Every structure is written in C-alpha cells, then in structure tokens.
Image (tube, rainbow, N blue to C red):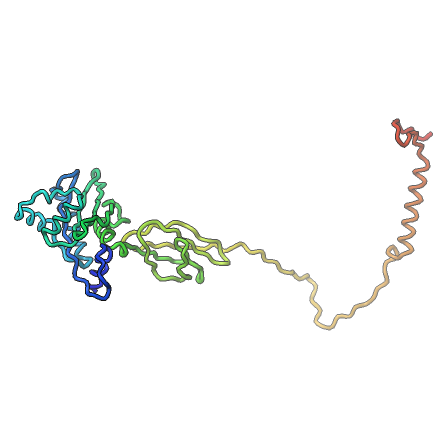
Length: 297
C-alpha cells in the first residue's frame, strides 16, 4: 500500500517513471514558510510547517522538515536559500542541498482568524514549479492544511463523499450530467467543490440542486421525490341492483308525439302561421331604400 501511494505521488509530480519499474520513495523537503516575503517565525507559522510535514508523510513520501532544512543552510553557510520567496531556481538549489527531489514552499496570509495558506511544489530535477494551491484555513470544506497538501501533491485523492438517501427505489441519479446509477446507491466519492445533482423517476418530479462536497467528509443529502398528480376516474354504480341473469330486450311503441305524422303536422302548422303573419304586415320600404315601418291599420 505504501509503494502504491508513493507511485501515485511521483506521477502527480511529473516524475515520468515507467510503470514496469519500481518507484523509489519521493523525498520532499519543506521550505520555511513565509509571511509578507519574510520567513514566518511565529508560533502559528511553525505549527503549520509541522502539520505540512506530517501530512506529506501521510501520503507516503520521505519528508525533510523545515527545521532540518534550516540546519542544512546554516551548515552550508547559505542563508539566502531560506528566503527563496517562491523562486523555482532558488528552491531547486535548496532541494539539491538537502537531497530532495521535490521542495514544498508556502506562504501564510490573511487577517485575524481568517488565514489563507498558499502552497507550491517545485521539481528539483527540472527546476520548475509543478503546481500551486490556495486554501482558507477557516474553511472546513477545503480541508485546511491536510486538504492543501493532498490537493498539491496528490490531487486525485482530494475527494469527499456524497451520501444519498432517496425516497423511491429505481430513481436515476446524475451528478454533473453523468449517470451514476439508480437508487438505492452506495456512498459516491466526488472531487471537493460544488456539484450539480439530479434525481429522476418516470412517476415523480425531478429533484435538482447543487451540493457542496468537503474534503475527507461525507455530505448527507435526503432526496424526497414528489409524485406527479394523477387523474383517476371510475364509473359509479347506481342504487339499482345489477342484473344477475340474462337480459331480455322488449320493443316498446314510440310515444304519439314522436310518430312521423305528429312531427309532420307540427311543421305544417308552423309554416302556415309564419305565412299569415308575414302577409298581414305592410312594409312601405323599398328593397334598396330607407324609411319606417308603418303599423297595420
């Protein structure tokens, strides 16, 4: 397990070692932290330096602490190497002095309790900066010093967990547009930061929200899907009992006012009445003229 972690660290730093060959442990030196361009000699600064070294060791690398680096510069009478201020060439010389393949440097800033830690890594062989990260020490989501070290040296392990509880089984789960599976689902590992969560089911409304994932922690999310409103209809029976035997249909004679001769008689009377009324009215108005209608005498 230790060798696998070291191999991952070497690849992340761009060591370029073939997979078929054993990867030697990466020796990482921690340069003294700075504040406002000068070496940070405060108690807080020294505590952060110690924590950086501890977390690097936790990733599987061999660590040369900041205190050991300071002693080496004193013995070599090269005090300038303690104030490289992020210069890759200077830090590469510092790494060569102590026998390190990578040098981690950083700066602490901020006001009061809101402190910000900036860390960078320089490859001694290429004399180039590989990566730089910045985290707020007051942010639990970013993971503090452990999160900064992991993000700097092994970003693939800068992860958190999403713990979903879905009210309906068989719902499809999407994170950032990628389908992860169906509910119920196990804990999902995600990169630290904000992610778009979408849970869908054909009989329920979609559940959509953004989820913030913190480093090294499980973020619980309870998804309660709302079912679509359904229109239900049913034929209600009457109070009469349903027939249980065979049904016999009987032809009944139509009512008298529905017979043909009654309907024809009603129509003839209506037409005759209309003709009589029309003839009794004298319209003294031309077809294309204007005037008033005179009442009958």
